[in-house]
Length: 159
Image 1 (tube, rainbow, N blue to C red):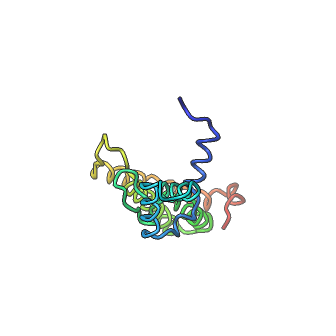
Image 2 (tube, rainbow, N blue to C red):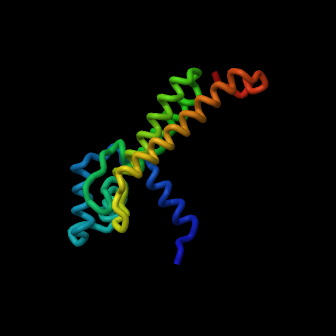
Image 3 (tube, one colour):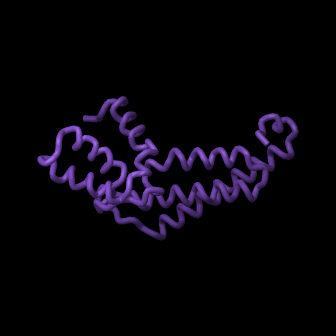
């Protein structure tokens, strides 16, 4: 049976909460040991440990994911990148922000990959990274050039 929308939304918002970026690997391992040995902890400690494990521990490898590549880093990194993209006025600046964002997204996907039925194909991932980076950079540079050369669109530009 599929979960209700509200349950899925709460899980997504919990996953995007940036606070677990501050959890050290040692605290993540301690939370994992609480989850593995629940009899030695209270129900509140187990619930807190489960949320830390969900945010910081790889689901298959059961090792801590580097904090900058945890799913919870999505919102802060995207916010900084979006602000940079909205305020840059040079195609090279847009190119750098797009490359940074695509690189971070690829690293997050790589560090959190958990499909045991299909091994991660490095070549396929590199091809997807190259294609998405090229498309993002082309769209970003094209948008900047369009804003510069079409006078009706200049009022849309933030710079």
